[in-house]
Amino acid sequence: MIAQVAARALESKVGRVIVATDSADVADAARKEGVEAFVTRGNHQSGSDRIFEALQAIDPKGEVDIVINLQGDLPTIPPADISAVLRPLDNPEVDIATLGVEITDEEEKTNPNVVKIVGVPTGDSGSRLRALYFTRATAPWGDGPLYHHVGIYAYRRAALERFVSLPAGSLETRERLEQLRALEAGMRIDAEIVQSVPLGVDTPADLEKARQMLAQKV
Image 1 (cartoon, rainbow, N blue to C red):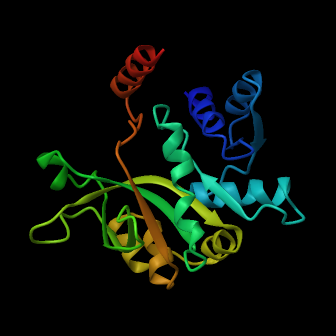
Image 2: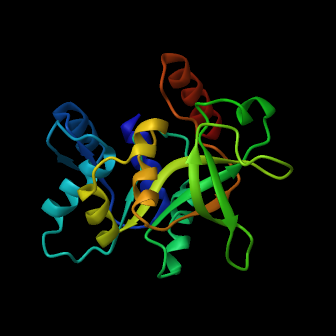
């Protein structure tokens, strides 16, 4: 699965791809596929902490300005969506960029496992939201679209450094959503709206579904 996620990242052509992991087995599997890997400490609380350790070690001179955190459980994410997450950073006021998808399944609107973005449209294209909040609840209230948050992030280097130095916030702890830490600290997150939700692999059934999707693609 890690090899498939790395393949999607390479297909996006956004830049250098490195698998950051605390598992030597995962790192070896990535290297066998010709993908760079970096073994981190095992006590990180989040993927953001992990990629920051890797970034400091791999780029100690600070030449990299932007880093994308792509989770290793998204083997079916479209490469175009990986590159799309960079677009909000065209605005120098944005600290962190992410993705959203309009929810069309009524059951997802009330599913707490589907994280929603509460935001306001920004930009001329109408395909971007400035995030005001992220929640597992059904929000916002009233008529209008709801947006499913896709958990991929593009950080400015300074924003990532600040983020990992912050203590966990009260809303983050309550909702169990680490991106709320950034909003509580006054950082700006914008979400590019895309057209598909990648399958997150959390169970053996998810893995089999992902295999079928990838086989159909081939």
